[in-house]
Amino acid sequence: MIPARQVASFTAALPFGLSFLLIPLVWTGAIMGGWWILLTPLCTWYLFSAIDLAVGLNTANADPETPEAQLFWYKALTQVWVPLQALTLFGLVWYVGRATHLSGLEKFGVFFGTGVMTGTVGIVYAHELLHQRNRRERLLGDLLLAMVLYGHFRSEHLLVHHRYVGTPRDPVTARYNEGFHRFYPRVLRESLISAFRAERAMLARRGRPWWHRQNPFWTYAGLQGAMLALALGLGGWTGLTLFLVQAGTAIWQLEVVNYVEHYGLTRRHLGEGRYEHVQPHHSWNAAHKATNWLMINLQRHSDHHYKPDRRFPLLQTYSEDEAPQLPYGYAVMAIAAMVPPLWRRIMNPRVRAWRRRYYPDITDWTPYNRAATPLPR
Image (cartoon, rainbow, N blue to C red; front, side, top):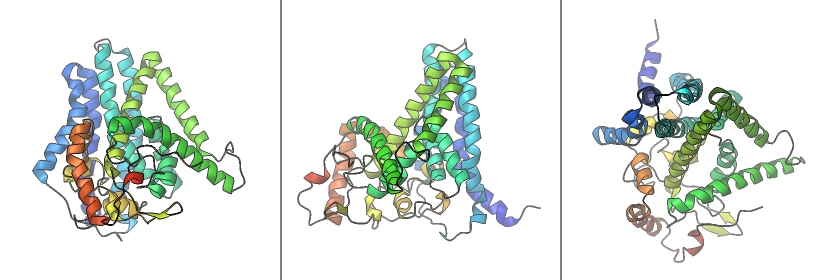
């Protein structure tokens, strides 16, 4: 007989498994074609937002001291996803590349939807895995990132973003009044450069050159090269092209979430390149229940920056008195980010109110508003 505690843990983890429904949705689009190819983006962007309206907010917090043994099913979700995503992605590369019932536009649509899945779920799961301390989970995270050709995200996120969030030295912190379409090409360029420089600096402190075998960029390159070769072998040039469509879509999904998470929020500069410690008010949060199911509590972002290796079911939510709150879940806010005038109308008054509340003494925000700041060497 299964212990009652394990049954309760499985039941509690089950809503987070709703993201697994995206796998049959992308397959349905590939098999049926036509308007069915829109199932995955419509479900991801709109259905979960509609469920948010129906089920409301979740402001309850789990005990952060919950033993690891009671988190088995939560950990299983993120780890089981990795082989399922690989089978789905490369199965689709093989199937769609040969599918005569799909037009070129339909094939593009299937892999756009696949990229929505690998970006919204796959990269978010990779983010959870790469923050853990054991090698197996970090390797699984690397595999998920390699499937979207964004391996350097691990270095950038762990070594740059968490250290410099809310400062001009963090490429991923969106500046006040910086529209997404200006942010996106900047972050693609600067995050790669900053990630490489961070790894190079770590190697230099150990007396090793950047080309040393311990530089994880060799791992990133090797895994990504293997993914490209597999896509080419399974689907030919068509399959490789579709794989690239998926990867590009996933990266866009990731960076629009990055854009939302810290837009306009900055840490106080203390002089001589030093900044105050990261506080809960340096991240936008959202307590919308369904989107947190889909994105495994990523919207509890302030607590993630407080305890980066805290597993997702234990992340704590903050009240409006403690940390800034988004008016809608990430999915709705990501859609708004695609329309800069709408985004500014929603968010700029909130950023200004945030500044008045937390930093009433700062009258000149010009240094904090720079849309592009030279990266440190």
